[in-house]
Length: 297
Length: 296
Image: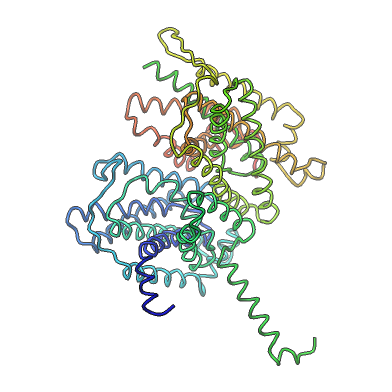
């Protein structure tokens, strides 16, 4: 593809790219928790909090940055309280309790007057652009990458694989779980705040059970072992229905089927498949080099 | 006002039927099957699809629907849950994998339903079950309402008898207690898993059909909101407990009705969600009793 053609292509697909980036941030929120073995889906509730708080403040004349900061702060506080309250829950009990939390948030949003009731909010200034989104996603990806490496990365890996072993190795499981939960909520809120300044409106139905399922699908299809998973997953799930146009309205069924197949046969997701392929290619290349051939079998 | 409590009784019966199937697969197989709502919807959808072309009697339609939904649940077990059980060694991660995969599997019947119904509310032909209504002591009740209540009580009693008295029921409780020892004493875990899923799916399908008759219509998303309510019912009654489940289902329906009558109809759905969070913190083993069978 030549440079001008690439720019035209970018222009044609800008909405898709923006949507994928917003989703990628939210899916980061799921991945950062799942990778540490914390099965919280509260990022979707925080997404709604981020979007609503930013929207309400901006409709009252606040500037974008302070409104976003307050929204993220609110979501971080809620996540912290939720993580403290739900601290002793594990696995699917935690998952279902956080689903209940998400649905409570939108139920509150659809009954309150300040959130615009069932109609939601609209007319928020559109200040988010694609470069801003790209920069935020890149910055968040860097933070997640840092958490996956070195000492912290290994600690979180232990927590995920064997939580009972972790305290024996001197890992502060309680604190790490709280950190993961709050970071997950912050990423969700960031995604919500960017969404509402990109689209300009939000309704309570948008943050329902379906959003949880879609985001989880993205994180799991991409792979929860690394930050690249949810990013890849968000693009695949946003893009595939466009590429496979003939599937049309049957797309949700295909997406469900892909999720099932990935969960059963490739638990590290697409990223795991890609990594496996790269490793195999390297082995092949190593086997073909002359030095390798000289080594007696 | 008293009329509202007749409605609470019907609502409680639907919750009971829905939650019993879910608590069975969770209690015995450790699967929190989030596709249960889709199986429930499938019951209503099948009734509509069949009755639209051939208006047949409910005596044929109800067993047929339950059979189809039972088979669908067995297929779900064979193609989704069994492969996960085989491939995931660790217990906790298998549980989460089944939960996530069941969400994906649910999308398939849901999409079919959206396509068939054009994503609209579709009415069930009157010929399936002519609705009659009576007024008893100033209370208005329909024959469908009576049937829903009777069916839920009968089926829960039958299920309780099956689990506690029959040979298969004993095997089920053994399976819930220790799957590995089951194999040693000659109980086939995979066959029993299929049986459990069949009963669970049949209950969901029957409940879906009855709700569709009660409302007079079907809709692709009719099972969605019930999923979390059933979860609240199950943790209130204790996972795997049938008696606790029935009591919790009627209690939730009653509290929701009280909310509608005395507080605010919009806050009705909040009860179940708040209940989930409060209960999981306060008494995760359930309010009524110890679970009917032990869980690891």
